[in-house]
Image 1 (spheres, rainbow, N blue to C red):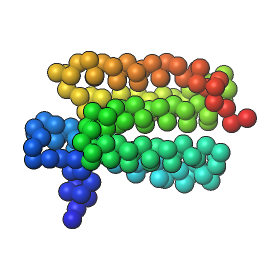
Image 2: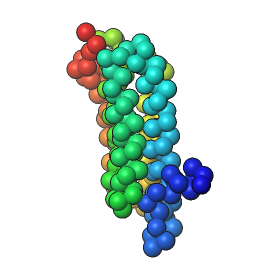
Image 3: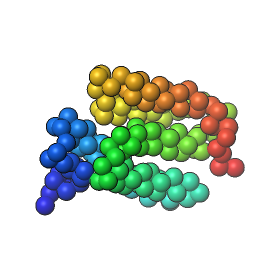
Length: 155
């Protein structure tokens, strides 16, 4: 059994519309991708910043929770997790590693901009309210980085 048929199709049902099944597969893909990416980042973080490496374990758990929600036929909740869960953990993580009252590094900002992609993948223009909500939430989290930077500190 391939990864494609086992992981990406969790929650896909013959009774669902093809549209919904496509969204379930996309959500499973995003959750799997972020979950797999969190593993090497956890190993690196655990080596150099063990105090915050638990955040990457939470990211892995969010991945599993997102796929689980598809499994129990809650695709709306799964898409919420895929859109909001990972950016939330990323914002907290970068807040910890950015020195207090310092601007966010360009690379971190570029990564945050990439978190604007999942809503555009998981929602169509017909779902304007959900798409707009998740995009605005992501932008709001990005704009609040100076506040989060002061809240979360390694000191």
